[in-house]
Length: 217
Image (cartoon, rainbow, N blue to C red):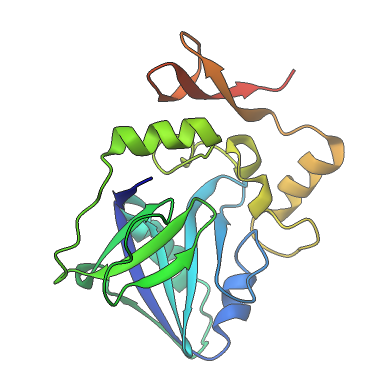
């Protein structure tokens, strides 16, 4: 199949209680490597991040345009915890795809909600086998939302196809009350669909079909 270069940042978190700290701020249950969502007080998305355990440290991979907001969101809530956050984006390239390509040498491999993710040293000569159009066609076929298209700061995770990343039995994270209320009432406002072209409310335009965020009836 294929692999595309992901416009990503990489942060390295070190210290005690990393999983507990991240779990208390995100929609998914963070007890090991996973994909999760950071939301604001209105349950809108700050970023969707990959949590990657590396020995006693954690690598946090997200969408590059959201880096400053995520660093601010985490730093504001450290509250004296012995945790440091280091930006190592300049040392790494990130790729994501179907996992059928040859694994880059010395890559960190992670099972993301969106596919197989590889964190690769910038010194590597590895190149993507897909362009963004190919990745988008794959996403449309499998109804996979992605950064900068369906996933933006204007929506909450239930509206853009990320319901699987909102753990049903978690509480006490920022935005939790709103998301829980939406689920309990069966009213999330919008949902992600694949529709044949031409259509309205397109978030990712494909050759014959598109991803759309449409209002619940």
